[in-house]
Image (cartoon, rainbow, N blue to C red; front, side, top):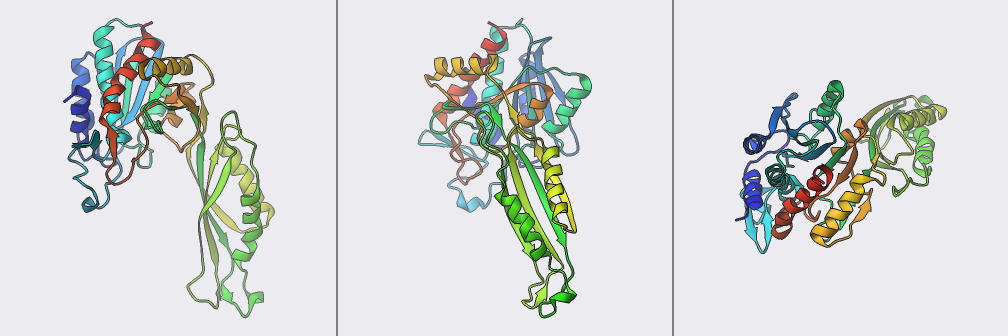
Length: 376
């Protein structure tokens, strides 16, 4: 069994469902300490975060990952125990195999090899792991980024090991992500009998024109390689369950995925103004999952293209699609961020798996990236 495969299996065997790290970070810290890294535990609330560094000064390259996984769901739906890694037909099965314990194992093996080959390398190489990526992401990388700001910690480049590839390893690299902003809207009315609407105030009727304007609006025409900003209504609820009662309130949940044309605060102000203009009596609770980020053409993107082409024989697509990742908390530090990892075919699904061949290729790819950025 290869070194990276053995380490990935050891991580999968730890049932680290958010926010429980289940000993993953301690296992990895032990290895990195033996390799000469300095390891710091940053625990906030119930969340474990591990920062391992080697070298000093700049430039600073950060590898970013998470040890937590989503719940497996019904165990009987899996072909094998989700926390007993099993290799079948060239695939490694287990919860977290692709998202993202395989990448984390590859990061660690690549870092061990790099500092062995370049013990006096220029700059600093670091690994940051959290156990809160799959959860609320409050006490994980978001809090660590706040600590970095407090310390004045500089980070030049960040590589996140999220499963970015589509059909084969390295065929897609994410160079940006949209921001995500969620809203819980409550529109107040006056409950009453449907036969006496003059004695009531129907919040559904009052809100519909405003909601129609929101969903019909074209927010922008896109940005660089980003698609246009979109708003999607996800839940609508009103009524008492009786067909002859005008409801007293309407509740609507919606989400915006937005490109760098916007900030969350500007969108919030725009939407609150629209609702007020329609004369609604409303409350609006916002949740900012993260601002958009974009890494323009430069040393990081050029290095990634070169390393992927030379290591894997692939010219990657450079994309800003998908949802969000923890890189959204690092990018505002002035950091250039990319995401590069295994094929995204089964994450969060029953029988999650990763190609063993891809897993065994990842340490070489990450080693090439680190070496080109820090030791050339």
